Length: 179
Length: 425
Image 1 (spheres, rainbow over the protein chains, first blue to last red):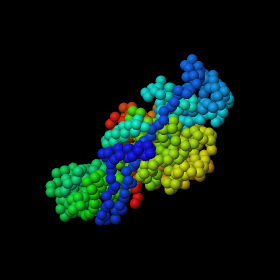
Image 2: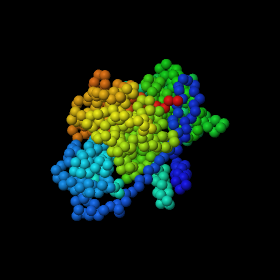
Image 3: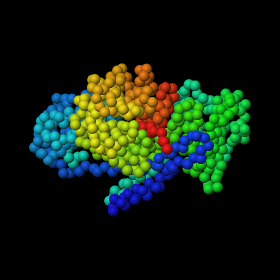
Image 4: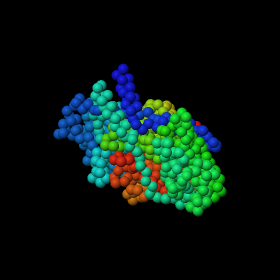
């Protein structure tokens, strides 16, 4: 019922919009030009995302002095291999996942803004897949880890500079409750 | 719950405001061999809330195929062929003339008639009468412009078609649909998370797109008639790059569920996913050839992203692009003869075309970050995303590169354009 009310509110509010195109005129035709019709106006959907609830997270994952609070791996331009400096970090997370079989992780691969949005989804996927593969080799289980890509769509830094780009070429490891 | 309702209300209040923000269009180039034409004010059009002849004139001008002759001082306005002073228009080197009339009907609606005249031959070559309400002036004008365009150029006009694009304003993303001239923008979806890759179904009633509302890319199909949307590819990993088959029954999508970004065919309702590439490399950005039998796509199987071509059922792929180290986002014209794509040259990303028969290539744009090209359904214009002053903007270029337009929305970032199909009825 509450849902219905919400939908009704949406419909009522939408009806108040000013620029609603009406259906095409029906033409009285003098020559052979075919009549055409534009489809009816689009319905509007809104997405209200559910926020994360980080309160439940174990302290080990939040404590800034614990390596597990570090979640990001950075890359060179057009590259997706995990650099050696991030191996201790991945080792610590793999160990945590191995010791906490109920823990779940989402790895989000990211790219800088240069190039095709869809190709960057694929490139970000390659980055996230690389992190996942390493975590699995180090003891995490397939069912615990999902690797996905945000491509260039969620930049941490929004200027068109190399400093910014290098922050956006990144994989982030999020634990269940954080996404 | 109260908070939820309040936030929806706020969202929709913003939606209404935004629906009125329109794309404005500037033409930055001119074509060759333009047809000189005069569009006279329609006799009696003052009874309408907008000038119908102004919209016809703007449509024809925007196409780049016509040279508009000043017609503002004709008095009295001719509504019939016999009333036209052909000698005057001949002296002004006009090839064609559009005249018309508007009368109010007893039921409060209007009848608009127009005639397209051949000036050298002093004859009528087309004419239609429309019955319209006061709200249908724009739609009627676009259809008049479509008739004029087709009669004089031999190509079907696209003035009555629609475009889809994504507007980002702060942290809000809206999937909007507007008339081809940018007017009448409507929001189909509003979200706090990115929306990319809108693709029109061949019948123009549905849009497939990628939404990040679940913290990862998921492919949706959205009915523009009912407003209903359905997640059609929501597998473990990423789901992206939807492309419609010619019959509208299937989508090619890119899934990472089996490792790596690979292409699959699924039913338009999400049923029966079938893998069609097996490369161990990136295979993405599928685009069906107009006959529906083959797919163009981007792959890095040769070491750098290039465009490939293969049967829609899978199998061996043929490499299509060879110049440069980054060629992506393939699209094919409706006659199947021209491929357009984005090429990186130095640090610039520009739109290129390739004649698939003669293999002649051409650079069509001169931007720094041009992306996401989309053919008009008649193949004569290409809509694409560019950046102006570090902000996303839409632009269009004729398929021969001669006519250029910029479409922009004040104070917003516009990207991911997709030009809709013709509407057949």
